[in-house]
Image 1 (cartoon, rainbow, N blue to C red):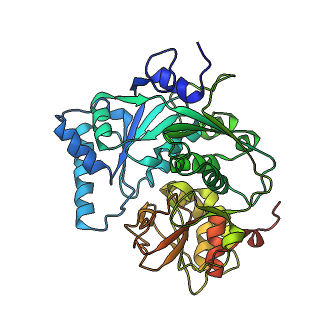
Image 2 (tube, helix red, strand yellow):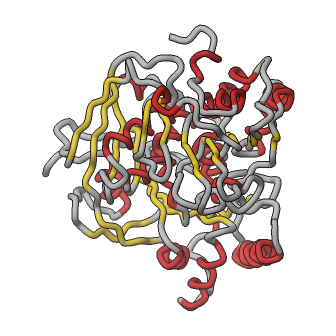
Image 3 (cartoon, one colour):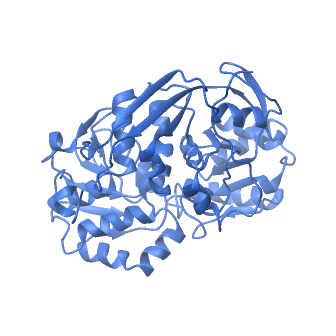
Length: 425
């Protein structure tokens, strides 16, 4: 029996087998499923078309309102009502309504719904974020989600794996967002199609969990099925007071095979910016400095966590947002918002001229609280910059770390954050 990598081991465990290999189709038992207010209505429609009835296990289902919260239209409000009724009828325990959770992926990890070694399916493409905790997590469409709600199982093709190692000394001004943008720029938006990307190396082992979440979140922007960091002491420390159930820690075998292997020395990497209209159109900040921005946005499932608000506050403290630019900040969850208040981060951000909004996806998908007009330019800490992503098809979105976004908000143009960070290495 050949050595297996962590993705193969999780799928073998989920399908009750000792061994799987890339290309095989497995019938796998799912540990958890998640859907939200945007994907939920279609999921329920397909669920009813399949015969409806009872879900396979209401305690293994998580429903989170986050994309259009609070409801911004009659349609959104009616969808919320439909989902609330479904949750009540099915006896689903883990339901996070308006004001009780936040952005779905942040809620899933911070509320302990993700454990190492699990197979987790979500009706959202950035479900792959949970791989930062050593799970195999991936997004699916409404049909697969409805079938999984009924059966607790899913067919999956075992993916090939890509190993990405990060070496060197990581400068303080760099973040997980800069690393993943650089990686996507090197590998390409379709460079890991239907593959499991495994992040490793001394740099990854030294990364805080928030940065790991960001990197796993954006694995899908390389076309990946999932993005995984193998569990270590950082993982266990994060899980300590969040997870009560038992879990199995899995890791890759020595000699496991990978379809590609990359190694990146991060020592001299600049802050990175992805330019319109592709996530892999990545440039060092020095090459794009000076481009005027109408809006700056810090938030989303990618970069709305507490450490993101801390670095933004560090950059913005003592400065004002440019009169020609608006800055919108959205904490990723109620818990993040509450802690940011305790630490005084919200005061710093408000004093700078930022607008703080309630936890929601909102502007990231161009539907709520910060939609762009034609001709406008936004620099944002989100995960995608496709045409029309944040509003008008005639707008432009640049992707960057929260530090770069905050610095750009101060100057009203894309700005290297290093001159606003004290004591950088």
